[in-house]
Structures are given as structure tokens and as C-alpha cells.
Length: 559
Image 1 (cartoon, rainbow, N blue to C red):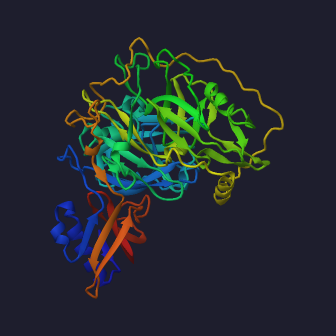
Image 2: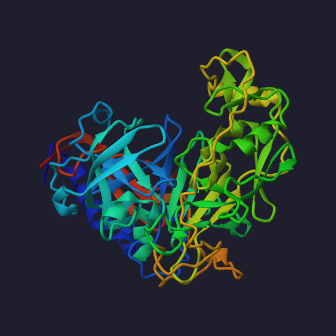
Image 3: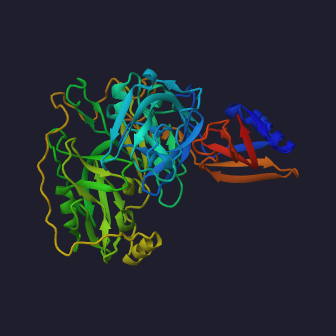
């Protein structure tokens, strides 16, 4: 690669920064008088020999209500939707020429990535279908996937050759953060664990956790291997919930294990009136209702037997369509809450769960939750982003033979806070232009009834709540921190989402600036060395974030 059309001072700065920054975190003295980075966080890990440790990256709300992060696949930058309800990761490739594919940056198959590894000569196929009837298909390959400071080498991903999945905001694919048993790629390809399972099973992280902060109007964070303590002010207030194990599907395996990021819901309430969930399959689920926590679901869903009782506590509410959508009077706006375990309750204000007023009747507001028919996997509730925005969530992957997977929830609002007034709710909905273009029926819809399908899982192999399994989780070289009864959350690694830079300007003055993590400035979908005029982002890989020092001079990069 050669650089042209660069002034001498710019070249000198680039070369100097390259020489300094390539030394990474092991060379702070080399930064003296040039650039000093004071990280806002520290790492308290139990696996300090790990090659990457931990990192934090921005999480951004997309126009379709999902959230995305920026990753590198073979040194090429892409945006990918994060999803805890699936386990497969895929990117649109240049072999996909459907209208939906052509709208986003694509992984260039003609690029000779030094970290690309073919699987079965690109003949191992995958086919994924989604609840909205869209689908994506292609072939399986291996590529180095990097997020912030953390790299999963030789990661099995799907490269899409055909898709009608609608992607917005230049998002090129999905990063599935689920368990291996949920992965089609894992089921069909040897040694093809999903992304987070790769990090956990190879001991790459400081600890096998990721933390998630979602926001509506600002940048959130995804912390890998650590907790973002710029959000979590007191780790002792994190409420830990053991993930629900499942029996195997059919004869797929003869052991139970972990399938979904799901926990037991023990109650829900409206304005303080509590109700107990009614599970669809009480026998295999210990007479408890299973709730899936899903970053990829921009809503809240429950079974008809619960959602009907829920709206029965809100006068003036009614079912308005066959999709299970209810409306409530916009002036009523009670608080709602969900309870897990022993009275661990999390409260949602009206602006957390109200979707918006109906255009045909602005006095009635569409609302979460929506109702769904019974699901054969026994998952009754899906708590998506409207719920996850109200908490900081910590997803602990579990350790083979040592510790079950757990989800930690840290409430971001005071449960005793004053209920938002109708005026405040109206002002909020107006500010976000939340009016829904829909016509409500002028008659009362009857609540539908459904036949419960056979249970999917093979209960002849029982699953025991809290069970510690021998495989498919993190490597047993980790020392357990969250195993009860001696939970020691204070020992979990910690990062901040902010950093401070101190540098000397051309006048010899010391300049200090504080930044929060932000998306890198590199072009999406463009391999290193390919033609393009762009701002050149140079990453500094520090302890808790990636600092990008941008040279704004136009740079022509020629192969």
C-alpha cells in the first residue's frame, strides 16, 4: 500500500502515531509529550492472561427499533444488529444482489482477506427464517471478528448470498449473542461456536460476561468481559437471575442445557395491582412462566392468558386487531412492573411502554405488551428493548462444571418515583412524533382462543433449574464469581465508557479533552488499501475503549 497526496507534516503525524499506537497498552511511556490517554475505568479480572481482556463499544438505536454496534470482519468495518434471541452471526456479501442487499455495505468476496478461512470450499450452506417471514441464506466461512479491543479469531459466520431481510441505517448483518444450541451454524459445522461462546470457551475475556446499556436518544454501550460502571453506580444492587435450562430437542442430544437467555417471571402488575403469570406448559417449566430477554425484539409480548388480565386492570383498554395489539386511554398511563424471583421488581413508566396515539383516535394509545398465541418452546413472555432500556443488563455466560448462566438486572429508575402525568406523557409522545398511522375498529374484538401445540422439548431428559452443565459454556479455567451462595459481583471486571486525552499542541500548551466512546470514522464495507477519499481513523486500543484520533486531511489510499 502506498500513500499519495499527503503533506509532509501529515505524513509525519501518521507515521509517529503508527509507531506509538502499535505498541498498545504496554507502552504508556512512549506517549509522553505526544498523547496521553487516561482511561476512565479499570479492570479487575480473574483471567489476566487472556489476550484481549475486555472492551466497550457504542450501541446505537436504528430506525427500525433495533440496536446496532460496529465490528470489524477481516479489518473491514460493518454495522451489525445485536441480538440475544438468536445465536448465528451473518453479513451480507457481494454475492447477494437482491434489492435489500444492494442497499447496504457488503462483505467483498473479491477481497483477499488475510484472516478469511473457507469452510468446505464455501459449500456449507445455512438458511435462516424469521418470525416476520423474511429469510437469509448463504454459505459458512471463518473470519476474524473484532469488537472494540476484543477479537474472536477464526469465527464461524454466515456470508449471505440471498436475503429479503430489510436492513436500515447501513446495517449489514446480525451479531447473534445466544447459546450454541440455538445456532444453525453450530449444528451443521464442526467447531463453529457462536461469537460470544467463542470468546467464553477460549478464555479470551477477563470474565465471560457482557453488559448492555440501551438508550432512546443517546449512545448506549456494549461492554465485553466487563461491566460499564459509568452506568452501574453500585454493583451490589445488581439483581441476579439464573437462566432457565431446557431439555434437548428430540434426539439431538441426550443432555439438557441452555438454549435461550430466559429467566422465570414470577409476577407482573399494573399500578401496584399484582398478578401471577399463568404458564402455558406448567409441568416442564416448574409451574413458572418463562421470559425471554431479547435485545432484537423492539417490543414486549406475553401470552393471551396474561395480557388479557393485564389490560383488564386498565379501564377503557381494548383489543384492536388480530395481532394482539391493545390500546389504552392516553390519559390513564399507569406504571407497570415485572417481577423475577423473590420480589425483584422492575417498574416501567408510561413513556417506557406506550407506543403512541392512534391517528384515527388520538385519545387512545397503542401499548405494550402485545399478546401472542402459545409457543411450543414454552417461552411465554418476550421482554425486548422497551424493558431493557429501563435496566442495565449483565449477561453471564456460565462456566463448565462451575457456574450456571445468569442475567443481572440493575434498575435505572427509582421504583418509588412519581408516576408520569398525562401532560408529561403527551409532551413526550409529541416530541418523538409517536402518532401511529392506524385506523381502530369501531367495535369490540373478541379475545381469540388457541389450541396449545405439543411441547417442543424432550422431557424424558429432564432439565433442572440452576443446573451446572459440563460443556457448551465458558472454559473451566475461569474462577467462578457469581456461583451462589457467595456471589461476589464487586470482583467482576469494570470499564468506563469515557476517556480523557492530554496532548501538547503546536504552541507547546497542554490540552485536555474528555470523550465518550463513539463510532469509528472509517468507511463501512471498504477493505484496507482499497480506493477511497475519507477521514482516516487511527485506533488506540486502551483498557476500556478505542480512541480514534482523526486526521481530517483528505487521504487517497491506493492499493
